[in-house]
Structure formats: structure tokens, C-alpha cells
Image 1 (cartoon, rainbow, N blue to C red):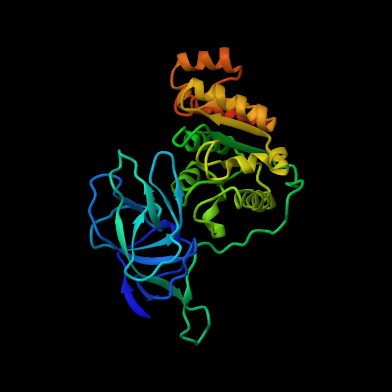
Image 2: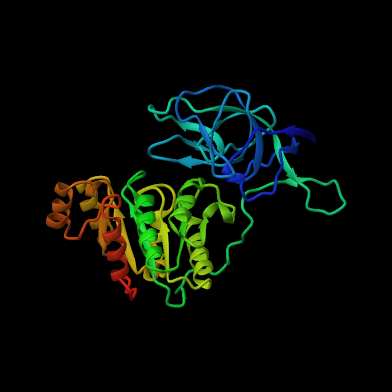
Amino acid sequence: MRSVVIDKMASVASGLDLGRELRVGESIPGEEGVIVAVEVLNDKSSYNRLELASGRMARVRSGDIVVGALGHRKALFGYSGHLPETVKRGDVLQLLNIGGVIGVCDSVNATMGAPFDVRVLGVVLEFPYLGQRVGVPARVGGQALDGEGPGELNLGGVPVVALAGTCMNSGKTAAACAIIGRLRHEGYVVDAFKATGVSLRRDILAMEDAGARNTAIFTDFGIVSTAPENAPPLVRSMLRQMAAAAPDVILFELGDGILGAYGVEAILADEGIRSSISCLLLCASDPVAAWGGARLLKELYGIEVAAVTGPATDNQVGLDILGQRVGVPGYNALTQSAELGEFVARNVSLGRL
């Protein structure tokens, strides 16, 4: 065990009460969510920032001592990588995302260049036993899943709005914020969470800025990156947790695309979750994606898309195609934010809009 003074604490570790000077150990569990201290080995001119525990973005430089978490990532438009089977001090791994997830990079996105290489300094230790200098490996998250299995979800009648996308960067968070902002402006209480993806707090911070009362992300429950195995119980737990606070509406974003590795399909296949969704909006990158996404949701899960938003609605041409070929209305979250929010309110039968 030795002391390390850190320069940057990534947002993946934001739930931990850690200072600048940490104790690190050499016996490192090769498990997802374990918090490690690493030294950055190279500089980058792009994709070179880290989301800090404060939510601010900071430039990363060679020589920085960073705290992050072991994990994996399977991103379409980003680095993809896996959790190493074993980890020891001195190993060189890669920083897989700006939230501080660390693993072995398998695939590089050409527009981002090579990832940051980082040298493992040790596992960050916590000292939970009062009066004893016995350190245990720190891990992300502190909340436990509620443990209830599949079945009907009793949410006390709270309507649920879900946003699914055809791919990454299809406008889900922009749409979520537009809806939250409009509903909040009209006096409704909205609680929101991000259900799937890889750890990054940026999206739920944007939802808070838009007016969401309570927010949550899967990292709060100890999950660095979601998968088909853990995504449904995560969503069930977050839905129950938020419904217990009695908001007027719950909104959640399904990170990544419908077809992806983060468990969106497993969530939609869960009958209890599916039946709790009052309104599903499809965020689509283009009209073909909107057509295919709406058809996929209908044929595989029996879900009728209420409306389409995202880049497919960026001008009147896209809106016309959606009406003619997809058969659902389109609303642009940037130019029609009020209309989008009002449509959702009507769709879930909120009284004042």
C-alpha cells in the first residue's frame, strides 16, 4: 500500500468520497467497476478530455494521474474494448471513454485517433472499518438493485416516456431535455434516468439543467457498462425508485441504438417494462432509419412509435417523408421543443397541455 496524489478524478468515480491523496494497493481484482489509479502516457489532439466527478470537462495530458474504473465498451462511434482477465501494477491499458472507463482497446475510431494509453499504478483503497487500517478495493456505485424479478411493474399510475434511438448520436438527449423543459415550464414534476450505455454523466446533468427533479444513471448501481444480462433489472429498479417519489411523469433514455450491445433489446423484450411505457419516441438519424426502426419495434416487440425526432426531422423534407412513409408525426427537438413537449403531454394524458 502506498500514497498517490491524483490530478483528475473521472466521473465514473463520482459517487465515492475520495480526496486528492489516495492509498493504492497492488492486489487488483480484474472486475468491472473496480476503481484504479493510472498514469497517462501520451498526448492527443482530439478526444482528449475527461469528464470529472464535478461534471466539468478537463484536458488530459501525458503524465496526469487519473482515477477511473475498469470496464468494457462496445460503441459504434467510439472506442471499443474489453475488460482484461487480470490486472497488475505496471500494466498498460487504454482510456475507453471520456467518463473514465479503462480497459483493453480492441477497435479504434479513425476520427478520434488512438486512445490514451495509461499505466496502472494500483487499485484505489477505501477504509470502511472504523479504527482499522484495512483497505478494501473501491468500486463504483452504492445503490443496490431491488432484487425483484420479471413480472408486472406497479408504478402507481405514473406515466413513463421512453426514448429509443436508431444509433448513437441520434438526438435522444436533446429530445429528452426538450420534453423535460417544456413539461417543467408547465409545472409538471419530471424524474429522468439514463438506462443503458457506458458510464458518462453528461446526459443526466443535461436533464437536470433542463429541469428534471431527480435523475439517475446505471453507474449509481455499480454498473460501468450495461449488457443484456443486467439492463432489464437495472431499468426495473430505476423505474420503481423514481415512481416511489411520485413524479407526474418518468422519462428515460435508452443509450446507444435499438440494435446494439448495451441491452436495449433485452429491455424492450421484458414484458413488464414494455407494458409500463406509456409513450415511446424514436430518435432517428435519417428517414430510412426512422422507417426501419419503427418497423422493427412494431414487428419484434409490438410497440407503436408515438413520434419521431432526431436528425431525420431537421427540415421539412424529412418531416414530410416521415408522415408519408412512416405514418407518424415528426418533431424536431431543437426547433419544435415546445410542440414536442406538448405532444408528449397529450400522449400520456397530462391534464394541462
